[in-house]
Structures are given as structure tokens and as C-alpha cells.
Image (cartoon, rainbow, N blue to C red; front, side, top):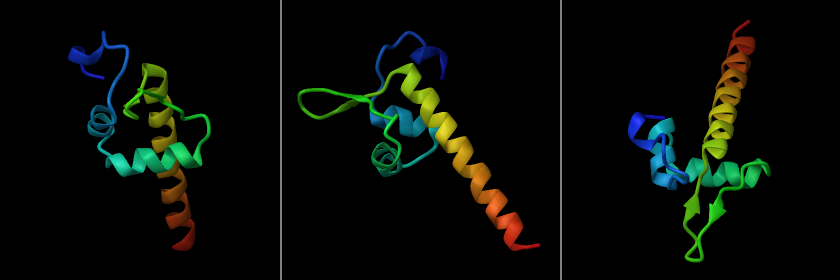
Length: 77
């Protein structure tokens, strides 16, 4: 997270998507696929990601990339 966002309690889906270089729809999809990823929602339905949610997004992103590259590598053997 950059220095401007270190003090924030909540981040929007747009902010998280930009931090992770992911489209917003990917984060919405991951919320459905990974029950542990449950950002708080406002009464209007906007998502509010905590720093802990963002760390989970980082972990999911990292693991999915590793699995994809492993799968691709195994296919080429």
C-alpha cells in the first residue's frame, strides 16, 4: 500500500483493484469463490476492504499466479 493509504481503515473496490493491478470484476468473482474474502458493505452496497482483506487478496492473487504458471510449465514437459 502506498503512503497515502496507510492510515485508511477502509478502501474501495476501485482502490484495491488499482493496488493489485486487477479489474474490479475479478475481485467480485473472488468474493464468490473464496468465502474468507468478505469485505464489509455499506448500506448502499459499496464494498469496504480492510488492510486484512487486502492481504488476503494479495495471497489469493499470488497463489493463483503460481498455480497457473505451474500448470503451464507441467503442460510443456
